[in-house]
Amino acid sequence: MKWITARRRHPLAGYVVVILALALFGVGFAALAPTSDEARAQTLSAEAPSPEDVDAANGKTIFDQTCASCHNYDGSGTYDEDGNVTNGPDIREVGSASVNFQVSTGRMPSMDPENQMPRRDMVMSEQDLADLIAYYDESIRIDGAGADIPYDVPGTAPQASDFEDEDAYQAAVEEYEAEYDAYIEGADDVDMGMKLYLTNCAHCHSWSGGGGALTDGRWAPQIHESTPREIYEAMVSGPGAMPMFSDGVISPEEKQELISYVKTLQAEPDAGGIFALERVGQVAEGFIGWTIGLSLIIACAIWITAKQRAHD
Image (tube, rainbow, N blue to C red; front, side, top):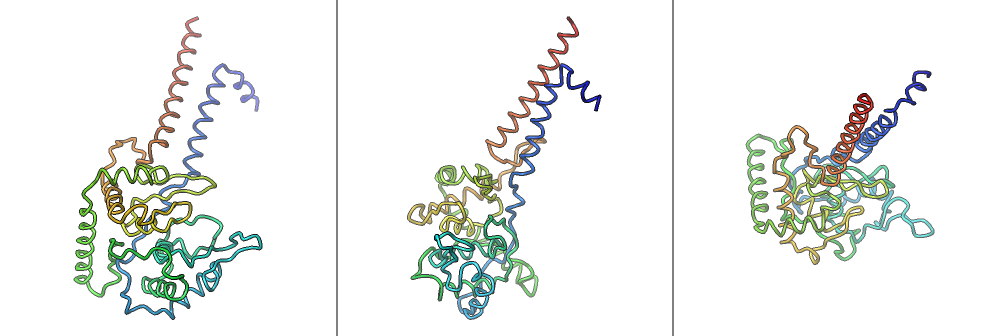
């Protein structure tokens, strides 16, 4: 320990401590802040089974086994004596779009209802989800409350495992790509989409859609790989801390402009060069630049001071 005692009196010791503190703070922030991996997107099948193929009875079984323990068997939620949510909130008026969004992105069912769930693989098949939504609409949902699933908005790309042969899979992919391109290209007011996104979304999801930290340990997930339908469902259902943007607040046409802007933004190459920061946003990039710049200023001050002392 003597070598530490001797060196802490060195004229440069204070500068070294400041630089180490800045470096540790930056590393700690990067390690603890939510990353895009926590909100990673998974590929599901493109279309839900047709209404003729759903089985509401099977949906009831799924609901009782996976949802009722938190949301109660009638969807009314579970609360304590003071009216605070204990496990899950009332979902009778959230709408099928909310159920589809939460389950298809793997956020529900949750094994930890007190904490925000990251995106993950869906725990059930597309058929089971369709059955669950059929039961929800038939027996849980109150008088058509909430938003419906926007089936006219492109969902996720087809999976080869859902088809018996390669030709059928390729045909489904071509059909999906045509639908996707038509929806994105159908939005012709890029300026409106940009203004809508920057006004309503960028302060949480960042200007690039990379997500960011919120209060109380929560985070806004990245939306780089979110499908148009998922973005639309999130807007009309307001999951978590996100506000709800109903079709009366932002019209379907305006949503299409916003979604088209987001998907176009995602397709742009990252021009960050060898020091690219994955377009995490102006605030984070500014903080990193400030930290590095301040460290260089301190280093220069140390070098000038040391040189001056040597000259004297």
